[in-house]
Amino acid sequence: MTEVSREQSAQWLPIDQENNTRLGRDIIFDYLRTAGVDRLYGVPGTNEIPLIDGTDVPENHVEYVPCLHENIALGAAMGYARHRRTDAGEVVPGVVGLHVTPGVGHALGNLFNAFRSNIPLLVLCGQQHSNLLIQEPLLGSDLVQVARQYTKWAYEVRGPNEIGMAMQRALKTALAPPMGPVFLSIPWQFLLEQGADPQRGRFTRIAGEFHAQPSELDKAADLLATSRYPVIVAGDGVGEAGAWRELQDLATAIGAPVYNEQLSSYLNYPHHLAHARGELPSAQQQVRQVLGRKDSEAVRDTAFLCGFNAQAQLVIYNWDDGPLIPGHLTQVYLHNDPWQIGKNHYGAAAALGDIKDALPKITAAVKTHPRYDKAHVDGLNEELAQEDRALAGDFQQRAKEIPERGVAPAMLVDALNAALRDHSVRLINEACSDTADFQQGLAFDAPSSYMSSEGGSLGYSMPASLGVADAVFGSGAGAAADGKRPLVVNAVGDGSALFYLNTWWTAGKFQLPVLYLITNNKQYKTLRVGLDVLRKSYDWEPSGAAEYLELDGNPQLSFVDLAAGFGVDGCLIDSAGDLERALADAVQVVDGGEPYVVEVLTDPALPDMDEVDINVDGRLSTSRGNSAIWNFGPA
View 1 (cartoon, one colour):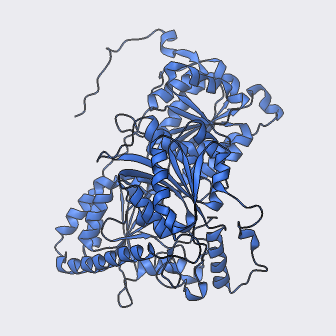
View 2 (cartoon, helix red, strand yellow):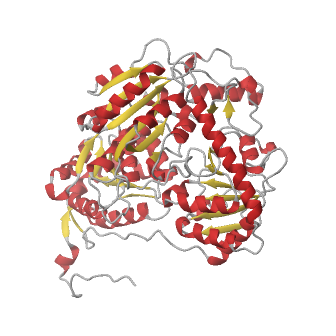
View 3 (cartoon, one colour):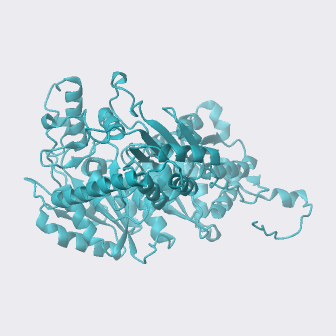
């Protein structure tokens, strides 16, 4: 039994002591201090000045980090929340201050990303003076209505006495599983008025670890133990639980390949573990084939959907072509979020509980099941091990290829991995065209070593890099268990990078050590692939040459020159021969405590869609075997 210490015996307090009346602004900082928050991101606005001023109060222990756009500030809070922990290992929410209606509007893209990726944020918005709201003042609107659909809870404070209660509820809600963003609109004058806070900055943390019902775990184990050809999909619930090893043990126990859900925000199952097969493809029939068929002779019979969130990350869906998860598959679910269990399909077993706790129980029950066929599983594991070796060999082969133009993404990733051999990487990935190579070619220590976004709204990675660097280095946290020095890398395509280049202003101002790796193919490459998919899927031809997808022309862009304008140094790599030296130099600069930009001209070649059947197993590929995941935005 856990004992809870009491500071003093219970006693009835005088009302003035119990109410703990304080300035509204100071009540907010009491709660931030309790939550372990030491950064506030935002774009300064008049309404937020009282709040920002609180960061100049030494005992608040919060630093204000100004950004040049609200979506940058919110993205930075995302990166911070993904990596920041208290000394006791508790999750710390990201906190961002927004400015009235335009601020919320500007931040909606990354608010959506945070909501879909279950990232705990406290969004504080400076509303107009409460006496003006009925009169439709400048910049004023129903801010709660704007933010509500992408938050777990949204509320507008109606007086300074509500601030403490609202903060308690907001932090409790943001950090309770499944985690996510919350939104508080605060008319600015309440920050400068006195309010009561009997809680004195304390808020309820709901324990996130709870046991799944044993009978449902037994049902799941029964279905998996008797399956002949199972398949596993690892969703963000696995990454959040830190359950790599536990899922590997189950995959080995049943002889199943493991796919990550599409656009996963964690690396839910890494390539260095047995049976990893990367992310699910992004075309309907490919998903059906991957999940439903083992090979040309055998079909799969059971799908274990573990922590599965992103269940329909597609652009095209045809009802006549059948459900994404083929109907012949028996579906087994495990998650700590009831909404995600059986969300779109029927589950024969549906276990609700802590994933890291439940997986070993399922594995143990599988191995002791009376119908468990170990010899059959050993055969499956040997087949999968052969495929593992073939996939690793394929990557190494592609890492040696020299394309007609630019640098092959696999070669870039392989060289980067070599340059980081003495480091523990923290990758924020938005190189949409090259996701498969970054996931396969880099060494990751933990699920959170990789960050992307399930939302798919572009412009998250450069902003998130600010918060990741703050969390990893500003708090002294983030060192790997083996003592390797952490290094923050932001891999971002040229199209995505152009959304928020002004991120570099904040990176340069605070000297945040981030290696910005711009994979520049001089076009919206994934959109070009998408255009070809549309052409082939609908037997349709575009009306013109789609020059709107080109970035190679007038004006000529140099990301190195653009970064220099914000005080950040960098270099250009336009040939394979420059990779090793340039990356080593870049890592040395970042190790020294400065941001640095490496612009790499990558292979612009597209898959030959005449050689690709989007209705069969496998990813889109060129005749040379280059794998690619079709994502949803410019890169």
